[in-house]
Image 1 (cartoon, rainbow, N blue to C red):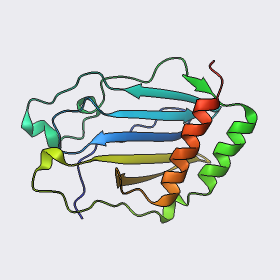
Image 2 (image 1 turned 90 degrees about the vertical axis):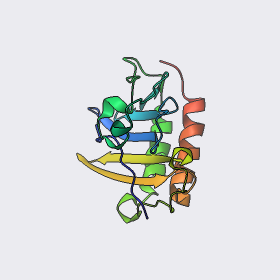
Image 3 (image 1 turned 180 degrees about the vertical axis):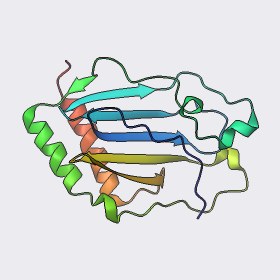
Image 4 (image 1 turned 30 degrees about the horizontal axis):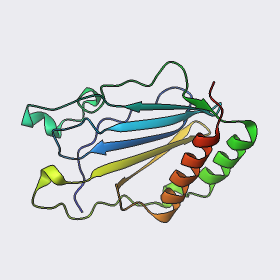
Amino acid sequence: MTKPVLPKLEIPENTRLLYENIAINDPDRTGNWRFLFRQNGCFFNARNTQLWIEDSAQLSSDDPDLYWNKPFPDTPNRCLTESQQAELTEAIRQVDFPSLAEYYPTPPDDQVSHPSAERWTVVQNGKSQTVVVENGFAPPELVQLRQKIDQLVANAPRP
């Protein structure tokens, strides 16, 4: 199991759930993206614009500026209704974050083509729990949570 270098975890204020999709050992960080739900049920999404790391020494840095070039917007993309917030709460509850193990398969010889990592952070009662898995190898609980989030966001009203 090889653990990749990831950016320092930065949890924005009033976050309920933070998801980050992060390129591993790849100078092209254009595809990095993340989303979060605030405690009030509002959803924010940030997808990088073009970002290429030219200095190979920086590939092993945990500086967030080398991973993210698009901040979360000031206004939410969507806000869940009260019933949707209850569904999100239940979906998060069904994932036992402390029991989930980090998982990284053996990296291929060609590091540049290595997949991305998913970093999930949930904040409950002022405490955060984070789990990192390689994209495509998430446990079923996280896959189901992601599917539920996609469904809730698609049906949530715009602010």
